[in-house]
Image (cartoon, rainbow, N blue to C red; front, side, top):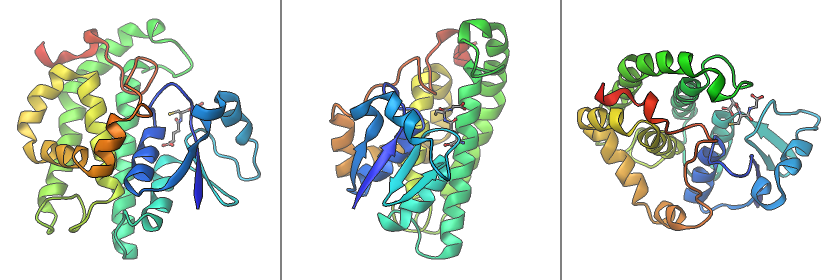
Length: 237
Ligand SMILES: N[C@@H](CCC(=O)N[C@@H](CS)C(=O)NCC(=O)O)C(=O)O
């Protein structure tokens, strides 16, 4: 079947978490925002069970919003999730925790509100960035490394012995954090070698490597969630 991904064009954003799972699963999909523009994304939100915000996915007549929920839906269809109900809820729990980290990474440059420009909240952003880099980031990365090490599957993947959407999402969040906070992440990468090895393993998967090389993987930029503002990268301070 063909899936329709709705997300804003021009940034990776949260749409990228869905793209990675679609790509790794070899799914046939249309990236509606990239092909038809932002207006087509906005128009599609006028639905009977509307999403609050992109990304959302159309599968037949179903419209599914919330990134973690979309991945929970796609996982079994693309063979990228555990098969048991218990396993799928563990995967969902991890995706929701990744979503929490994504919100905090975003709020570093928009601590007051996403409705204001970065330039209007720069002082607050600097304070938020210090606490994020020194306290929150190590706490999240430490948690994910602990989960990986605690997996009985030889610690190759986050859950069991197979690749899941959780591994793909962790790849994306780690890559985004390295783009946004290169200096902070350098020190943290040394302290979380298994997580970084997981990131490399995902990048080396045939379908993901091909996707990362393709023009449809657009670069991170300062309109997205992970933004590199050197003044917020407190690693060397
Ligand atoms: N919790 C939602 C957040 C969705 C979200 O914040 N989407 C952003 C783009 S990445 C957006 O367009 N937000 C519009 C708004 O919050 O008004 C998810 O994980 O999918």
